[in-house]
Length: 420
Image 1 (cartoon, one colour):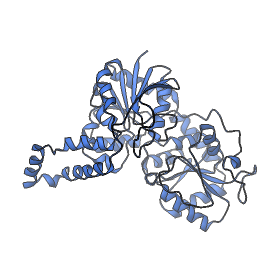
Image 2 (tube, rainbow, N blue to C red):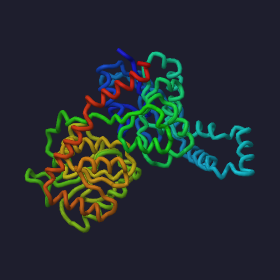
Image 3 (cartoon, one colour):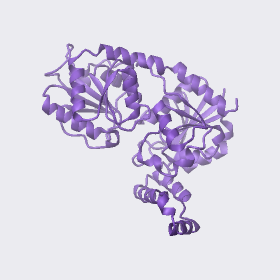
Image 4 (cartoon, rainbow, N blue to C red):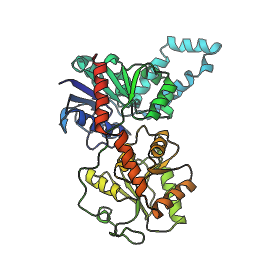
């Protein structure tokens, strides 16, 4: 059995994050045909990267997980100062005339762009030099190294170790950090790149001009949930269901699933929902599933339930009127595809190319650019039959996101980097 290793910034059943969840389900699926290791940090959350898990080797759902301690937590001020220098020194005008002499002078005293790129990666974290040492000493035993997410130290430093056997899953999107000079060489290193959507591949190829590297769009396999909660939704939400409700007594609600963060567009979602409730008074709720990284407005119809188990999440999603996806930065959005698979329409921001492609390609949801669009979308899904959208969503997943297709593409990529 071939041995492969995933390298990812966090890993665990308790970890809440899209790329991390993607890594976990891929590792567990591939464990049926490969001897799978995961190399990761001891961090549970990404704000500080504080060590939470012990530095040890454990087995989770059949996958061997090597945890390496972070040497220091995220150094926000140092990362910000370094990022400012990188942005300034990578501007063409800084290298004109006398500026060129200044740059050479900085390089002579060790203030070069490569050095500050390394420092930025360490400050950004999770800084796990022992993980990189392990890779240097043990990469020969792996047929392939699979790096997930471009943004963090384990990938930035780890891809340099054995690029000839490296598969890169960047989960890239149009955001500020990706334009830093630290990432220009990174996207030229791997033997092959696996993208999650066509939109991600187009963006990366245009930005880094790396079409010569073998690539494919692999996505992820989506399946209906295997178990549901035995409790009714009203009990899961710990509320009665006055006003607008379904025939079984459950309340009407929209649902958001994921990290509750301004970076995910949640501030806009809260603003639009509260405004909608002022214009359209009703019993409609907004249910939030996930860990908060921002203040949640105190509103009688906004119901945070925190991090829940899979049966509870599936039950809450199945009974929702729609999933709301306000994030302008997504590289796949598994929760959107899970919603499609369950026949639940999605109300998504048109700012995100990936979400826009999903909605337009499936015809299983509605897009919004403004509050007026949001209001129209909610009105439509509350008042009209969404049976056609539900069927469209299921068909879209069946066509493009089956495990058979995904695993075949992974196998092909592993054979390629292993020299087969």
